[in-house]
Length: 513
Image 1 (cartoon, rainbow, N blue to C red):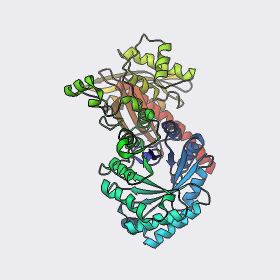
Image 2 (cartoon, rainbow, N blue to C red):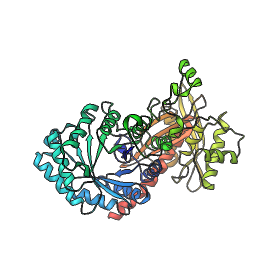
Image 3 (cartoon, rainbow, N blue to C red):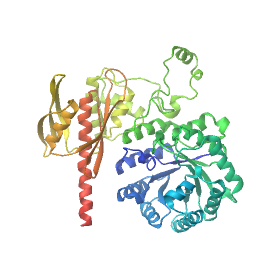
């Protein structure tokens, strides 16, 4: 069975999704989970983009041990130097160079002719090879590049010692037959093409990223590039979980597989969704909430008689459990620990105690606490952000003919309760005005969203907010069966992160003085 290498760009292309801004700690959490998932190559970021991105890439490079860590670079010496610095300490570093090759990019973006593009790419590869034994070169917008010129650029990259040559459909323009034909053409027309791995990188603008990637694999691609949940710029990238399960489920047809640990797919999807704030649609293939759900009476009848009548893969394969055993308010610490172990968590005592406390609070509000409830609690990442301010009590009064009013008590420095009362245009606005009053912070609410993480009338709601203060921004999450409480917790979570970020930024500014 032919092995297909998995190049994950969740931390780079995925983070370029509008509204997504991962800090270093969040990147590390995702990186560790991607390592558990068993990806082969991890694009950790674009070091030349900012000092913060360079530092985050370096943190990932030093943290993971069993993955090739990659830094993206334009075909410029300064960018290459930034990747060199960012990947210091990596056990298996690789640089990813790119340069646009299509006529529209050559004319309007680069202002270069074919000869200049070829010369620039060659010079960049030669410079980067001084520092990196592993190098991937991408022909940006290859999908709209002339085949003969594409073959010329690929041939140059082969001769100059590239390890991987990537043929991206950068704007999601191609259809599967066109994209697959490109790989076939290169295999047949570029001398010594077998000295490199060919890679497929597809965007989903026309909804064909998965189909195009599979077409490339059928025509000789050795690697595919994608993101968890298919996140990314515009309509997103190829979803890694979709390719992995297509190859697994239809290995008879594709004759190829990844080496991913498929049982980690669900957990990885949930983590990426939580930390990016990008909700996975219920009908999303493989990882959507309805991917293994059956409501139709005919389907249910078939499932009861033989599951394969309507399921071509099992939920267990991707790490889901069919079991719906629930815990309640009478459950003890031992039962809670056993359930966490069953769900794959091994927690130190202090983190377990904090999680158990939150569980007991939740169990008092809900008749039943499901596996999904517990997973949602765990994914709040208790204790990661220093709690400068925390919620003690909250009271909200509201009427359709009265002005909403919020009264709250916060725990804050120096360990004293802070009381505030404020009005607002709505209940949430009143709560946020009261928090601003209590903390004395002036912030801008850039984004606010709510979703249900479990089912039923007593479902837990998760609120996601993004706050900014000048050029500093932070995202926060709050979880509760009461959306007003969840809203307050999310705002405080973001505010605590914002204060910590501001301290770091101030120190950095002072260092430059």
